Amino acid sequence: MADQPAKQLLHLVVGGELTSLEGIEFKDLDKVDLVGVYPNYASAYAVWKSKAQQTVDNAQMRYFIVHLHRLLDPDKRD
Image 1: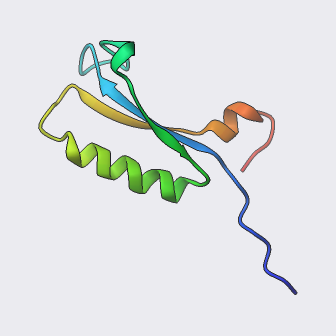
Image 2: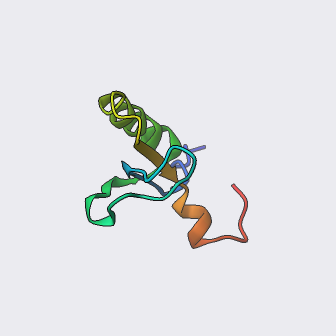
């Protein structure tokens, strides 16, 4: 039996400075860092962790993982 390729579950890593520590509103949308799209959560997490560690000295800077596959097909469960 041949191995099935892993199911592609797209994830976006994005970050930027927030207007406050209490919310999730970017200070300047022109400066939002669209890091990239990744085929699974594990690879997105590795990039997110690296970017978050690079900006640890800036309390206003946050990076997020967006589950694109859930937005593209909201009725399907993974």
